[in-house]
Image (cartoon, rainbow over all chains, first blue to last red; front, top):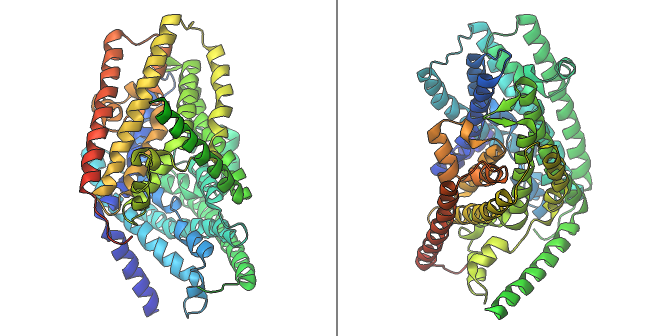
Length: 259
Length: 267
């Protein structure tokens, strides 16, 4: 376990190495999502239908914080596969999955924490508070690691294809964009057509953003939260199983020379 | 002068040929990359559709006009992404840090030209070309007629806007000379560019100014559309043209200073 603790510490140091880059990387999406909040405020001003602007602000602050858990890049893993650096993990007593998982997880969660520390006080200054119950806060925190686990497994599935197709960044990015639009990060699912709201309950998209935000905003009761958590867990395990299957198949036939 | 232009055209022709060959090296990735822009565009289209399910106008623009703005933004961004954005991104990520700039400086072509245009993203070129059909369709739907004078001022604004966006992005790219790692700067510009499809004037005034001057995404879609529909005036037009001249000169100075202070050791 000590070696993985070291990976965690090294990943954290790596993240803090270039602070301006960290700052920009952390807040570019937060700024983008807050612009979306302003867009919907402008819509609310002109709309004849009632749009709860307070809810919108709360929603987008939470979305900005959660965003990083489902939007991260595994370019380094793809590069390791393409250039053959993956060999060093295959011949040493370290699991590549755990190495990459801890490396990406540390960076992702550090960014989420930094964003939360900055955005929640700013939101409070603007008069936005969440008023989340302790039970819902606990459920919300339970969602976070599973969201990352599921999304990491899914992105690693796409990245594993690099063993066969060499360059697969476009596939990974396409998956990421589909999740961005359908998970509710850009548009609250409540604004989507009813048929989509219905089927989205069973798809892997909404548990990644919309549902945990609803939990945080006390909009779901315990049974609904539990059901959504179950759906998220199911999809995450499915992605993980697929990832393990592909990885095993790939490394089984993998050959490297002269690295 | 004429010889110089031909020389650069010839170089660019060879660069494009090489870019197509490189793209076709990984065919699956190329296919996904070509369709990727359309997937993203579909997302932006869904957002606008959702907006117009709630209201009939946004910031004084109706649905058809905003669809034109979306089309124009996507076509412009598609060309930016195809021709130079990826190069600037790469330069900021590895150009100075890995010392690959040296190979550019020793070639008998302008370093700024090679840094900006050496590897066009040919996988993206189908995106702006395809979206022109979308743009034409929604232009057809707009009730306001486009006059000859509005079309002329639109063309002037398009040229000025292209200069502004390119030179401001290029100026940001010069940060690579001063910061060891600066990739997030250009990625931040890319992320914020997602908002170029909305009328920038709907945002509070400080943000409007920020999105026009600091991160000039308003020039990708908003200002050209304003002039296309004859909503601009001569004062705004002269301000935009002056701003284009200022950003051009600014980027020239920034790059001259940055290249002068650049030193390299055994890269």
